[in-house]
Length: 94
Image 1: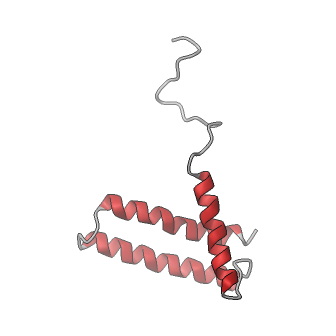
Image 2 (image 1 turned 60 degrees about the vertical axis):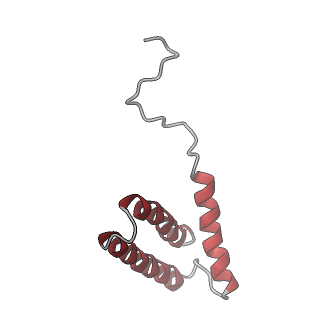
């Protein structure tokens, strides 16, 4: 193996995450939405409420998958969006 070959089993620690910018924008959008409603995710109660809402959405998506309204791949893609809600609630608490 030459130094130009990259093994398949190595995680690229220093490679830029192609989805990082999208996640950052979604997190900022969560805060912008709260600000539009005269709230902020810097408030711990608002952040906790967002976590509760995301938990409910997760339950709904899992139920839809269980009832075969959506498939597992669709559920997992949507859960990725739900994850940004949790991340936004945490981000603005720092």
